Image (cartoon, rainbow over all chains, first blue to last red; front, side, top):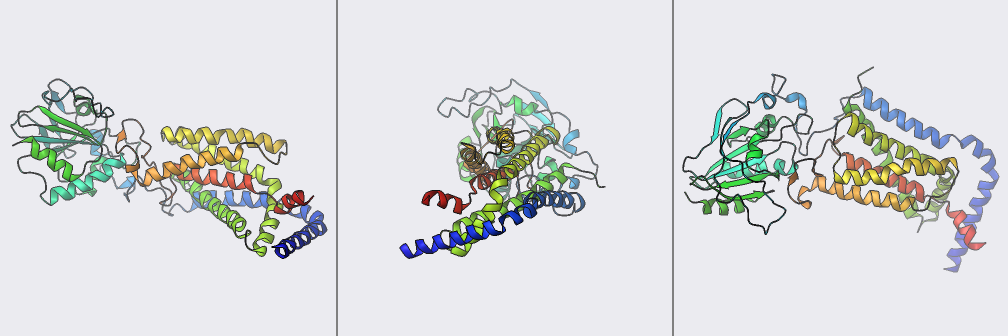
Length: 247
Length: 189
């Protein structure tokens, strides 16, 4: 311990000596070394960023999504031009998902009926037709929705949805300035086969009392709301709730 | 001259972040190795002797670049800051004044500055974790700006909080650089 302490002290003294001997001469020469290096790094970063645009810049959204230039060839996405759906019936109160113990005041209320269309213009409706329904609200920029959509699609493809229950998705909160825009390109990439209602003015979201994403509304065969939920749900949870809806 | 787009600026900060990580790893690594190796201690001492008198000014440049980037991305690019972004801004923006004044006054240290940088790094670290594992959060996106929303990832890695994390760590590293010989001299004096 003492030896190593003495060793260290000796080395330290040698360094001090060396620094003192060459210090004054070096100080003036090296004064600009570090600031110069800093300036060079900043300039190189700027030059590379400007002149090498092929360097694989910002991926948008969480997943390995495509750059925004891969939006449908029409330029402006169908997301921006989709017509606002027609809604009939009273709006549901906003779902208070942060108060899990409070009873949902919307339970038993009739679900608003919606006549809308998907991004290709095909008619999609939420109608009082005697079938229980699960309505799934998604936002293209929401990472939780981005994770949930492939899970649901895999479950749908595997035939996991209980027969007789209708699953409908609503693409809402569409914002060109946010990541993973447009929603139709995202859903196409995910191979989304669930019917989609485009909600360009967030009117369907408003009518269903949406408080956050992803958002779920479960509707019984009588057309009344049974339950509502927020967040990522497992397909096991979904199946349990769907089985309870009754056909 | 190619047009300077938001993409360009994202890449610019991504490259700076890579350089910053290099500096943090070199300084931090030497400091760590110096515990057991005399050669590393010699190298660290030589580096620290050069760096320490300028560390405050370099840290100021880092804080100014980070603040400039933060304002560019929110005001020009239109990326709305979330709650955690605001906490990081609260930790980063004061550095421009604090370290600027300290540089002009040739101060060798600023009381509390390293702690502020550490708090900023902790918030950024949590935010970065949220971006990769959104389920750490409540499991849902708020209607306005959820903190799990990733506006961009330059080079597949550098999101806004990742850039902030790197900036905080570099500032912290620079503020903690001290010539070990000077400290030992004081002890033996």
